[in-house]
Length: 153
Image 1 (cartoon, one colour):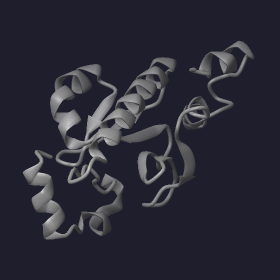
Image 2: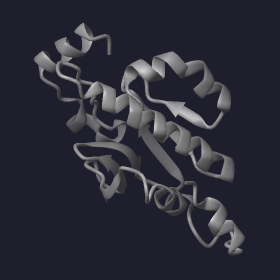
Image 3: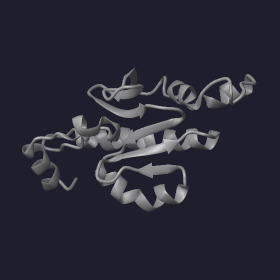
Image 4: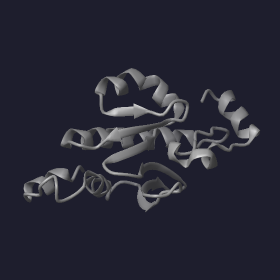
């Protein structure tokens, strides 16, 4: 359940707790664990074997939706004015400045969990390096690239 309302009812001012901290707290009872982002600095929310949310700086969250999902909902994401898309990666960035942004993040993380659960089927690779990983994250084997193309990612 979304816990942000509990913080607001306690009189928390927006300046006393960062939205990233609220975001991490709201996922406490979800099937995710908090860890260090693979592409430091920052924290991440992860499924058992895949980081799907990164918090690198300020009030920004990066969510791994998969390329297929991003392609399907690009217009909706861009129309929101709150989401930036990292082309050809499957990652999007959400600006966390309002309570509505936390609800948006919650929806996107729910979608990311579903998309990445489906992508873990045999012969279905949806992982992509975080856009912040720079050249380190852009290295992929030709075999993985071919598999991504074969499966429509």
